[in-house]
Amino acid sequence: MAVPMAVMLALGLWGLDRGGMWGDEGVTFMVGRRTVPQIWHLLHGVDAVHGLYYLLMHAVLAVHPGEVVLRLPSVCGAAATAGLVAAIGVRLARPRVGLWAGLLYAITPLTGHYAQEGRSYALVAAGVAAATLLLVRALEGRSWWPYGAVLAVTFLLHEFAVLVLCAHAVTLAAARVRGAVWRGWIRAVGVAAGVLIPLVRVSERQSAQVAWLRVPDWDTTERLARDFLAVAPTGIVFWTSIALILIGLGAGRLASVALPLLLLPPLLLLSVSQFRPLFHERYVLYALAGAPLLVAAGADRVAGALRRLWLEGRGVPGARRAEAERAVAHVGGRRELVGAVSGGGPGAARGTRDGGTNGVAAHAPPEPPTTHPTEPVDSSPRRPRHPGHLTPLRHPTRLHRLHRPLRPLRPHLLTLAGVLAVAIPFLHGLPGYRDDRSADRRPENLAAVAALVGREVRPGEPVLFLPSFWRVTASAYPGPFAGVRDLALEEPGARSGTLSGREVGPGELRARLAGVDRVWIVAQSNLLPSRWVPGDPADRVKLDVVDGEFARGRQYVHGRVKLALYIRRMLPQDPSPLMRPPVSAATPAPAPPRPAPR
Image 1 (tube, helix red, strand yellow):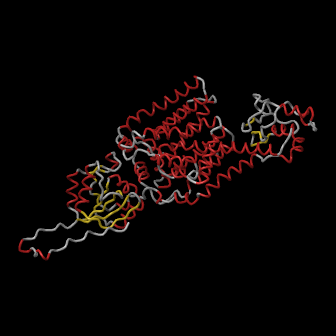
Image 2 (cartoon, rainbow, N blue to C red):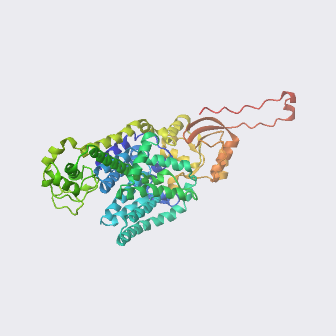
């Protein structure tokens, strides 16, 4: 667990201060710096789904209000998830499967992207991974209440995490558990769902917040699959990952946990979104944990098959092969079979004893039933709990002499080879990782827009935000906006219980706009001109007046947001008849101002 966590922590901290927040991070920063009563007031009208996260960020930002601190909880959440994925792999398979799975999760580009965002999604992924590990522990006889408590907290961080219950139910069904196990799971789930119900009722009234989502199409599904299933979305690494996932489907208990986690939450949300659009990849980021588990399990099965083929290719006959199959190697405090299960067994040993040329089998203890080469073996000196466990050989020195030319690769060398194989796609994709740590790779850079305001807008000049959401720029970076005049604002967001503040009515806004000849607009970059009809009356007035009575001067665009200067058009005055020029000397209309280059 420690190695994947350390790698994820290093990748998360790399380039964390990228020099600017984007819109959603600006909302987190703005809300997190309000008082607890102000946050509670806000949640009654908007963003209730993020309420617990905002309260957490209020405590975090009280330490130091900065961009790095804003993103640190997500980095820690991603590191915890990498460690939990490794722990699941160790518990359901073996240590090297857990190590490989945790490292694969850590180097997946989508994981690193959300590990560096000041939003709740990396923490939700950690909660789901912890709940999945606790589910496995509960199936082994532990209490269900830690599982239910972690689920409750995770659901409060984001309610779409509830889809993981479908994956866990399939895991229980695949394990064919008894009725008592089902009853324990249902009780734990009932407690978590009971905590979630009030949040669902409130967030349902705030569903207009996700009205911007669209019905997902096949391209959306394909992009999600490429982001989830491999470290690289194309090329040999992608197809190798797909092949290993298919091989990993035969990994027994691990596959019964990882496969439903990987498939069911995304597929369910994609299906529901065909009727009511709710899908975004970040809402099901937690499902990504299933892919590295399956890839690591597939790689382990391939390694075991190659090891068996190696022994068979050496043509080891009779008792020598049987002894090689029973050889064990120490891995930490545990043992695992390193020989191949092919052609051995009690029959082979008896054949050598009857007519073989060496006497090793005559001194060997009776061979227990064959164990699968990937099953861990208890290393304690006590008698094995069941016949499927192997016992150590009584003559390791003699076996070492006889099989010295045939000794397979040591397990720690195989583990190291897997780690190096994980490092290859990471090094290959290093330029992409570096680019993702640039502020330009986010939808917008509010810091750059605020810097433009500080450079271009003179103190006292009027500013409009269109739509009003982009007032988050001034909330996240208030310094450059300190001297400007916000024409539309009536009451700030902290006092009004809103994200962007309460604006004046349409009539008052028209009167204020009538008194200015130039106005700066902080707007969505695809607006003005636009066919978009805002739902907010004040935003409609801004769009109508500015688009109809003003001409654009210079503008600066940063992703989805732009800063533009609009100057009032000069209306032609109707001269008296004596002053009108002759018809033949008509004056040409002035040319519209040339827009600044984008």
